[in-house]
Structures are given as structure tokens and as C-alpha cells.
Image 1: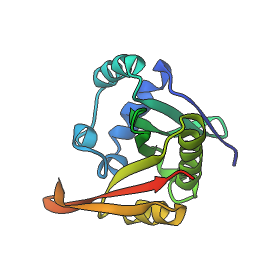
Image 2: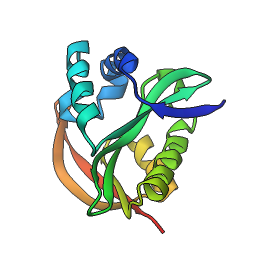
Image 3: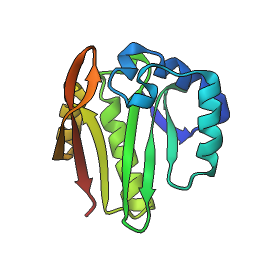
Image 4: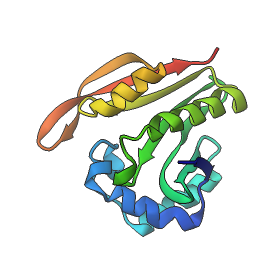
Length: 166
């Protein structure tokens, strides 16, 4: 299956609404979208995104079908680091190695195109599949924020992981 990455467009916003409103997707995302989102919220997000030099988001397409997104937010050019996010929004495409391919794409982009020194992410401790994917790619745990998130009436740790450029 051919995977391509393209910049996010306004026309992609209904997909972000669909993905963020999928409980299988949003249960491990940040507080701002864990309860879902609306098209109005996403239009506001896109308007601010277009002006923000610290964010760069790409749609992941499998065979021309948009299935998720990957990108940077909090790109710090002076410090040469950035925070990444990966969302595989379509249920049928999770567990097929696409997340790892997206990691390769976004880290290559960050290290080669943006000249970053460090790329990091935050992941909730019950998201074991994601943690294993990140570790197999070379991300290392840097910190554990104890009982940082509250999901399904239970507190979980938030893990900070990073990878460094050569």
C-alpha cells in the first residue's frame, strides 16, 4: 500500500472532526480533543494554524484515501526541537505499520528539512501499542509525569519520549 503525505487543507477539516470524535482515536489524545470536536472548532483551529510558524501538519493518505495526520506543533527553531503528533484516524489502518512509516517521514522532515536536533512526543501509559512503536523506532523515555491524565475514571501516567538527530 502506497503511503503519501501532503499538507493539510481546509477541505480536510471534516475528517479531523470524524477522527477526533472517534473514541478509539481520542481516548489517548490531549484534553482539548478527548471529548471530541466540532467543525466550528476545527475551522477556528485551521485559521490559527495557517498563521502559526510553529506548526506543520501533513495528511497521511493510503492509496489516495486520507487515513490520519502527522506533524509538528511547538517547532522551536532557536532550540532546534519540536513536539510531534501522529493520529491514525481510520480504524482499519491501525496496527499495520503506518504509524512507524509516519514516524520515519516526520523525523526525516524534522532532522533534514527543519534542521532539528531533537523531536519529542507525549504518550499516555495505557497506549502500549504506540509506546512499543516509538521505542522500536528509537525514541527513548525521558520523563514520566505521574498520574497526569484522567481517562475512564482512572489516573494514568504521561510519558515524554524523544529522539535526537545525528
